[in-house]
Every structure is written in structure tokens, then in C-alpha cells.
Image: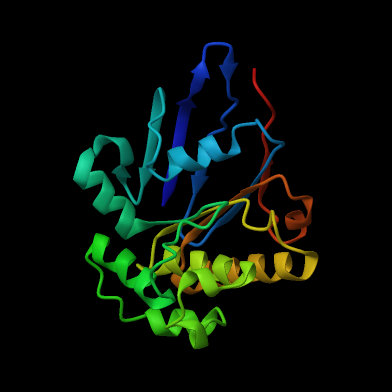
Length: 210
């Protein structure tokens, strides 16, 4: 389902990241651990179609991601990849449900699972609330819902527990795993948070610059 081979990337020749090959079948989960500056978010952005590698190839469900360009890449990403960013990428002026409908609109999805998703994530009663009225935990759950709104084949989460206490951190990882299993999707979490290690057995640790 997801294959990344011979990936190379650097922001300068003196700042080269060690990027391992990744091969994951449908439904598999992977935890990428590393300290700040190790390239975790860079890897996630490349896997998510947001940052083109200098060398190598990334395939999702047999499609070479960076053979697509412009609107084609945007549509493929919107339909197949759900990204949970470290800071919620949700629109404050919109309601909870409107944020999901916006994600549906850009990928051409129907959005018939939005309300079910909000119920499963425990924020259905907030569906008509403006985003700026949400607590931090509710906003994080909305970010997860928005990433899952189009039933993606690949779910990518960047430091999803960074700002959460132990109880909420465990809850968020559990929710991510449950939703990934429901969609039979690949789940990749990148984090420096050692608390996540006990939740996903398939792990790689990346170092700093080389």
C-alpha cells in the first residue's frame, strides 16, 4: 500500500537526513521515533505528497506519488491520504461539521460518514460549534476527523500527542489505531514522545543529520 525507496532529501548539503526505506501493506502501522531536527516531519511531508524528495520514489496503492503534479496530486492526496498535523489545520470561522464538509469538497467525496465519525471521536454534540470554542482536546479530535473524512488509505500523524497529558495522549493514539483498523488503512505516527512506544510495536528510530 505504501512504499518509499531510496529517498534522499536535504535543505542544504550539510544537512542530509537519514531516511530509511519503508514498505507497509494495507492495515499495517508504523511508529517513527526521533529527536527534534532528525527529519521526522520532513519524512511525513514527503509521504503525504507535500514535499518532493530529491531522489527516490514514493508509491501509494501502486501510484507513484510524485509522478502526479498540480491539481492531480492535490486530488490524489485529498482522496487517499489523511494528515494530522502537529498544530490543527482547521478553520476557526467554520463549524466542526463544516470543516469536514470542506475536506469532502476538495476531494469530491460525499461526506456521508461525517456524523458517524464525529460520534466515534466523541465530538458529535459539537458538530455545530465554531472551532474557536473548542478545547485543545476537542480541536485535536476534529483534526483527526478531518483527516479521516474521506476514508483515506494512508493516515499520517505528526506529533499527535505532543501537547496532551498522559490520559489524553493514550486516548488519541487509541483513536488513531481504531480508525486506521476500521478503514484498513496504513497508519504512520512520527513523534519524539516516548509514551507512544508502548502502543505500536512496529517501530523505527531515525537519527539526526549525517
